[in-house]
Length: 332
Image (cartoon, rainbow, N blue to C red; front, side, top):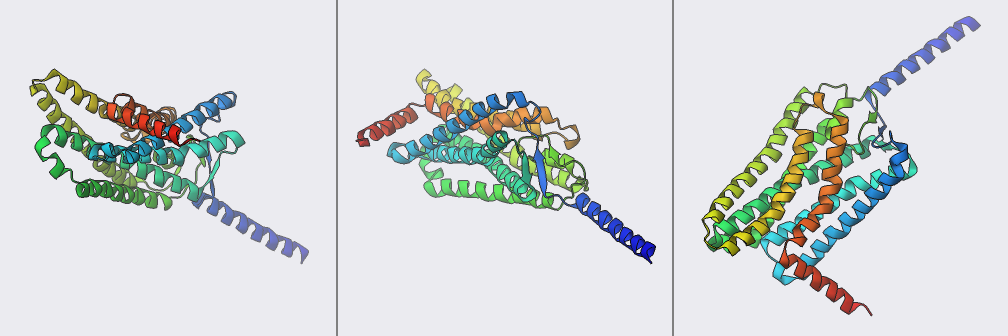
């Protein structure tokens, strides 16, 4: 009777263990963000660099927004789009960098499954919004330079607001569709993500579900949200270059190149790293290359944008100077 009971208990325990193993293969409660943990001796240096970069990013972009909002001379379509770009850069940094800093400080690199998906969703939304907004800014420059007589009619406040709203809606829809599909996947391999945040391709490498439909959808969305805006930017600047080269005034050419140069610099930084990471099959994704490129477009580019747009722009420098002067006057 004792042997029979022992055998029954053993069978129950075996069934429970098998059930637990099945659940472990089909669900996951936490991911491990390895990030830069392979080099613990570099953690204090990296923490200092990332913290300084984060503070500069937030401070610089908030100053751009305050300067544009407080100066009525900058209440134009170009600066309206620039204020939106600064807001997106601030949000993107706040989505990624604080978690990286906390992980480095506490040496606990875990992130919950829902938290990982939420971070991925917001990061994709903001990155897609960057794509669309850079295209809108290029179109704005095209109308201002190539169709100056129609500028106030074409880029009226209602149309500017409509362009930004449509960009936000498209970004949220595209990001939600991929995030929803990712939430249905099973993760039965390692739960260690060789990255410092929850990005699409590193997560895709961990799943044991069939990702064929997902990858087709991902490349289709990449074409829609990446290639189409980039084509708009290239076409806009082709027309701008053609118009500028026909202009007789050297001063006019210099002003146009000064205005457009900042935007082109940001476009080059952004799209260079995006294409390096995302426009490749997930099977050939390199974790090291992905991390380096991700540092550029999640930390470096948002930090540089305020400097790129303000240092070469007399209107922005004037607005910032007036903002600082007003702050000093209000200080008791």
